[in-house]
Amino acid sequence: MPMNERDFQNAAAHVRLLLFDCDGVFTDGRIIHGTDGFEAKSFHSHDGMGVELWHRAGFICGCLTGRSSEALAKRARELRFEELHQTVSDKRAVFEEIIVRRGFRADETAYIGDDVNDLSLLARVGIFFAPVDANAAVIRRAHRVLRRRGGHGAVREAIDLILSGKGLLDKVLMSFFSDGETA
Image 1 (spheres, rainbow, N blue to C red):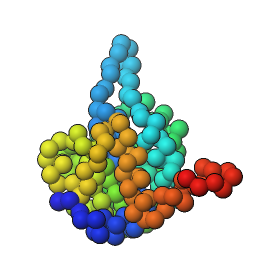
Image 2 (tube, rainbow, N blue to C red; image 1 turned 45 degrees about the vertical axis):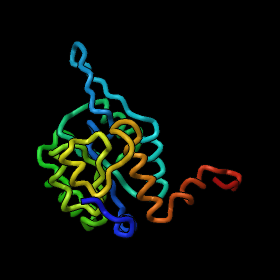
Image 3 (cartoon, one colour; image 1 turned 180 degrees about the vertical axis):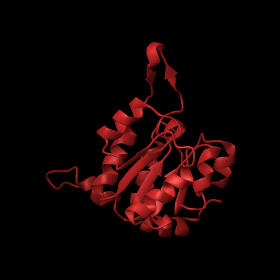
């Protein structure tokens, strides 16, 4: 159910909260298990900078994931996620709790998901994104399919699209220039 450009711009104008899945969205989906419980995940620096841009624009973000990972908890602390929910079996219930607690309307949220367990949020959020390598059922239903793969800048792409749709991307980029030169 892709959105046309006008509907996307309208939806983006309202988004204040960005949530996303971890494995397959914030990472490439690979999980590396080692001895003694060691687990590793790979995070893309472009996604980290995207979260920084999102925060500089004055918005909040977080992750809803079915797994638990110390690597994700560490990355979430580094990037100052306002919401981190691990071992989530019912993403919609957690989503509803978040928007009630924070005083958001459902249409003020965007979500990035890659697999069928994310689809429970499709009808609730203002914009539902899917990385280009998401499950086929998710791609068919997403409001917007991203050009980037999960773990390879998909979160950053979604953030850039939302900020651009809000007319804020250039202003936020300018905050990195200390001498006032243009982007």
